[in-house]
Length: 353
Ligand SMILES: [Fe+2]
Ligand SMILES: [Fe+2]
Image 1 (cartoon, protein in one colour):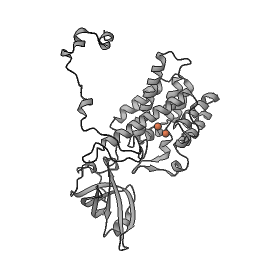
Image 2 (cartoon, rainbow, N blue to C red):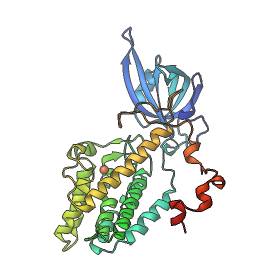
Image 3 (tube, rainbow, N blue to C red):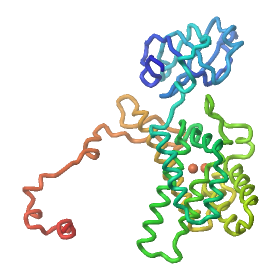
Image 4 (cartoon, protein in one colour):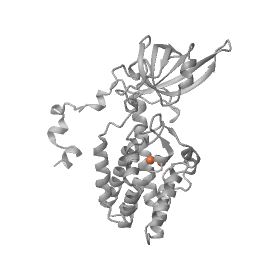
C-alpha cells in the first residue's frame, strides 16, 4: 500500500519523495547541446512528466517503461502545467510491500460481482449454438485475462477491469433496447440472443490487442491486426470446431464483431447491415463516450473557468457547471401555492392517478 500524495493532488512547490510507475523515457537535448532525460510517471490517479537534468547516467542504464521507481525532487509549474524537477530517480530493491497493482488504475466496480453478472447473463442465452460458442471462447485462462483487461489505452474504460465493465454496460443497453422494442411488438423481433452474443464478444480481441501487465500499450499483434479482426478470426476458428454450427448464424455473429465500430473510417471493415448490428454500434458508442466524457469532467475545469482542458479525442473542451446543485439535487418548486396544483388540472396530475 502506498502512503503518499497521489499525482492528481500534487501542487506547485510540493517536495517529492515518491514511488511511481515509469511510463515514458526520452533522451532530449538542452540548448547547450548536452542531454537531459524527459520522463513520465503514473499512479492510479493520473500521470505527470518530469525532467532529469543532471546525473542520470546510472538510472538510464536500467530504466525501462513499466518499472517502479523512487523519485526525489519537487513540483514546478511550467506553461500552466505541473511537472517534476527530478533530483534523483532510483529503482527500489526487493520492496515486497509495493507492487504494480498499487499504480494501475482500476474499475470502481467489484471485480467478483462483475464476473458473476457476466456469467449470469451468459446463462440466460437460450440459443445453444451461441451459448456454446461463448463458453468455448472464454476458457478459464482467457476469462481471467478478459476480466483484468482495460478497454483501451487512453479513451474509455482505460483501467484494470474496464473491458469487463464496458462489456456489461453494452450488454445492458442492448437488453434495454430489446425490452423497449418488445413493448411495441415489433416484427420480426430483435434477435436478443444474437445481439447479446455480439455485445459479449465485440471487444474480446482487446485481450490480445493490448498489453496491461504494467503500462497500458498496444501489442505488436494489436497494431498489425487490431482487436476487430483478432476477435473475428478467433470466433471463426471456434465456430469451425463446433460441428454443424449454422453458417448463416456464424456470418451474423461475425458481422456484429466486424461492424461494431459503425463506419469504415472507424476501422470497421463492414458497416452495420442488420438490426442487431446497428443497435450494437450505438450501444458500444454510448457506453464508450459516456465513460470518456465522465473521465474528462472528473479531471475538473481549468482555473477560473467552466470548461475542461481542450480534449483531442472529442475536439473540444467540455462544460463543467460551477452550480451543479440546480440539477443534481431534488429540486422542488413550492407547489403549495400553485393554483394548478390546488385545482388538480395539470396533465401531470391527470396521469398521476
Ligand atoms: Fe471495439
Ligand atoms: Fe466496445
